Image (cartoon, rainbow over all chains, first blue to last red; front, side):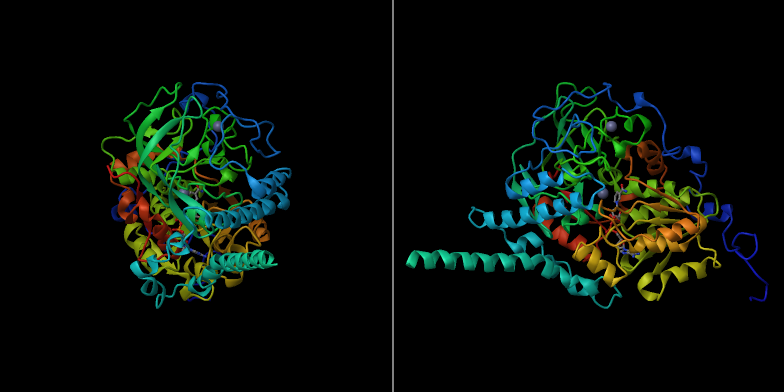
Length: 197
Length: 382
Ligand SMILES: NC(=O)c1ccc[n+]([C@@H]2O[C@H](COP(=O)([O-])OP(=O)(O)OC[C@H]3O[C@@H](n4cnc5c(N)ncnc54)[C@H](O)[C@@H]3O)[C@@H](O)[C@H]2O)c1
Ligand SMILES: [Zn+2]
Ligand SMILES: [Zn+2]
């Protein structure tokens, strides 16, 4: 027990080493300007004020080309507006469409979506090699920044704790490439062999 | 037009893409001048967010010039310089009518548990983002705001997410005068949260990270005390020690789903993706706060389950508050704070990178090279 006797929280007072408001105001420009909760923009959390948003509709006009757009089964309808960045296609598209049969509370929904993501990536890599712009692991991973941005000096001798797992990243990234290259090799070999027969 | 596109985990490139089109009468097309890379983009970049499709363009922090407007747009015209909140939102649904812009129900068909976000996978609606020369902005009368003449354009881009989120994170802490506030994470969001905590009357602000150069910024930019968790066997115990064994009144998680500090959690959560990320910082927050205290979570977590110490939260009687930031709601007050000189957002910008070099920019920000804190992307030099 300290000489002064038991202290917070074993007794009721607050910790003693908190500076006074005057001291804080002198040290930190703007200290306490939002002290009153009512000055804080998200207080209270919900404020019913539909006229304040700039919307001049009760329900937005519906964006066209709605048919086939996948949606969560937790939605009562397709939302009036939606993104069109990368419509479903191919094998990954079928996996993803299947994932959308499950509600958002189900692990199957999200794990199937992740599977769709990986299949999409593998398919895109494979397709890129018969395109005018094959994937380039050097430029696409930005790994040349290691040289230009002091990769070694930034990492070592600095007590960083992420260095202990960063070595795994190249494996995660290169693994599918190695597998893909091996697959391509086996595929080509099989075709060549069949051709010889 | 040129745009950053996703090619699979840890791989992106700049491609020629078709110009975005007006797809809805209240759309606008914005010519992006400056964009930014956010800590949230790293979750996509690392392949952690379900339904991140090849060819998708990231980027939810951007400003630009109006190129074209749809027939029902009333508040914007071609040539206006605008800042665009990272939320895509309609302004009229149940949630928007109550100010919960980040929880809009009319813009994301893919999920009900999250609203619309630019360039943030199909799980947030499938909208291409602003790390591109041009971007489609839905509900142009609702989200975008003309950049005031007095405002620095870099401050404007920081207001579209990082600054608004740090400030929102401090609000979620319900800080009262004299509170001890601990912020996990000294990235852009954590730095802004620490700085904002003072405005709300904190008596002590402590920032925790393992990157010394970021902690240095926390001391100079946010006048905070700092602790490098790599130097302590148990940072939670250290937080008890420094608060007379009470614990902090408020703890803010500004780290999110890819926290470091536990090898097993990192490998199972972010490398093998067996859980929705690694919630180490959130668990530290729950354990560092005092009983009856508040944990504010602005660090992002994905939809897949993660191993949270919920029993501690229950037994300690904690208040847990969290959300994606309703950005535009923060703006009027933040504009005042910037004008009064209380906040200088672009003090934390470390890199300005041309769009063409964005792949190296992502690698640098992801691997935390070259003392990077906040990288901006120059899409169309103005
Ligand atoms: N809620 C929202 O609306 C919203 C908006 C923007 C960003 N975010 C989220 O906020 C988080 C931070 O974003 P940022 O741009 O500052 O990212 P960032 O990656 O630059 O910063 C994260 C920091 O946390 C540190 N860190 C890692 N593990 C830690 C641990 N266990 N304890 C303490 N610090 C640790 C890292 O070293 C890094 O400095 C991300 O998860 C991002 O997705 C949420
Ligand atoms: Zn962000
Ligand atoms: Zn809405």
